[in-house]
Length: 221
Image (cartoon, rainbow, N blue to C red):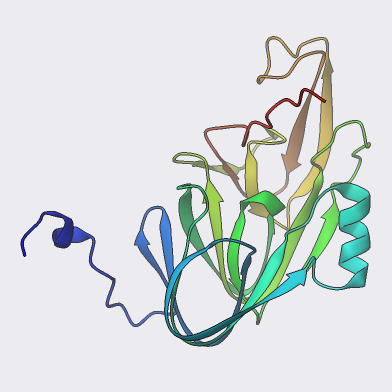
């Protein structure tokens, strides 16, 4: 049987634990366990089990309930190849070596269980801003993050601002705050009324996606 389908789409043979099968699909060579967004598994080969993990413990569950932030997680254990994806979003791997990274919870696809993580609030943010509780990873391991479209990585060497929903990840060493621009919603971003941006200062980087995230459909009831 012949088809161009078999040219560049065959399963990756890389021996790395985390491998991008393509720009929108992650392959994990599993021999132990990995954490992943609930429902992100699209295929697997081998002996693999999946267990719902909620938000990662009662403390994190309470934070999620209060903030609306958090990650519905599953623990994936066993041995085999597991493929993950999230609505055909682009996937990027970040390898931490005794580092710290802050990620918008909705942009986390999978990560090594060797990493410690917690939900934290952006300093100076009021509840009116929304979307200002993010997840910080620390330690050594890999985090797979997703973006809507190709992102830009900004080097923070001057005061830097990003739409709250467009900011995907940033160096945890950066100082963050929320800036409100009253009445400029029609001009800044895609909101209306009051516009909020995340403000970054210090030394580090910010990953910004080419979208303000998924659109929540309106309800008629």
